[in-house]
Figure 1 (cartoon, rainbow, N blue to C red):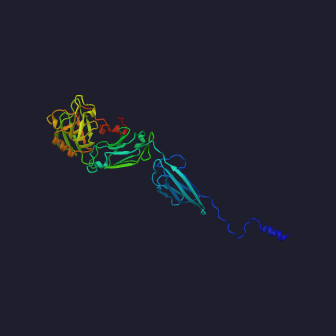
Figure 2: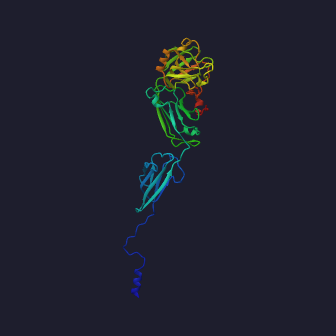
Figure 3: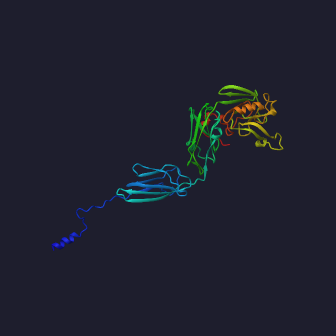
Length: 382
């Protein structure tokens, strides 16, 4: 009976003295975020975390192209975070592996999709930096972001626009209309200023389904202060270089029926010659005053047909009467000098023309807007 009792005891579930106990640890839990199933903004990073363990491998791949998304693993290997923006309307495959404290592996697969905007808006810069790289810009040139779609959330977009000047000059953004936002200082830029503007708008909700397509930045250099002052009472155009008058020339402004706008005008384009057609402002073939002709040495000072240009046909009136259709008429020799010395961003200030002030939207009437109004930030659309 004693022997039987000992045999039964030897068959029990108790551990035999000296036998190792298998180690145990909670399984590692791997989580992918965002993981709500809804499309995310492409600026939202993808994160992978491991609880009760460490990550051994994380791969995030563009499902369409196979391109991997770079990311950073934390020092303790418990988290991974993507390190560059994603793309719109794209699915990403997430594959993660992790181990718990005793080396047991867990795998996690997930799919993250980014949103598809109804429309994407690019923030184009005006003037194009390549256009003025060699010459620089004049002291009157506003900084311009021109969006390719209407912007509803104007105040939010401005928070993502940056402008720096060297030397520093206070400035402000102003919405000319739903697509164009301009930046200027209280007065003209200081000669020699370097201006850098940036639109941090990729992924930004601009309203009504419009999202920023990409960031954009541009740098400009301001050259000498070339300012021309056109006085409709004296019929003289006085030229100033950095505040010193260097030349005066007779001119003719707009006739009483076509008065030139008053106020500071900024040169936005220059061409050796263009075809001028009065139909562009409503005087078409068959109507009194219609014309269509080639005109030389043209510097545009507004978007509705005002130029400084050569006008050999009005040399006799230059210096004594206003006979143009709104332009600043000069003799061929004077027009050549002006064309050689003035360019994009330089200023033509017009007084005593009998015209209305240049509207802010009329490329560029920015300097007609009082500074306190400009700082308020929003104008009226044309």
